[in-house]
Picture 1 (cartoon, rainbow, N blue to C red):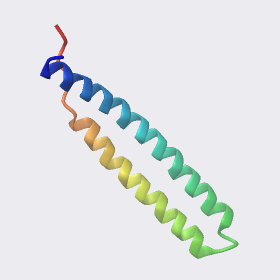
Picture 2: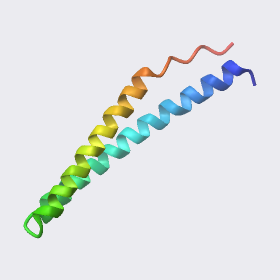
Picture 3: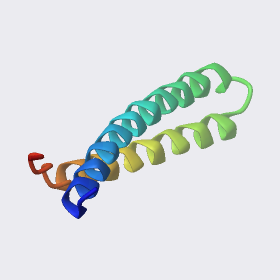
Length: 78
């Protein structure tokens, strides 16, 4: 396997992983918000912490999206 092939393979795998992580984090973010809404009458502190966790998940996704955008395009294999 040539160095270019290995790099292209890593880029393709990373692109797939970044897409997966972004989607997965989005699901968690929504779940945290849903649970914050459910428990707010039980504990506003718990609800606030869940919303904070959701906000941090959104921030992590923002960084993952930047990483995906910065990922160089794979070079064609010959």
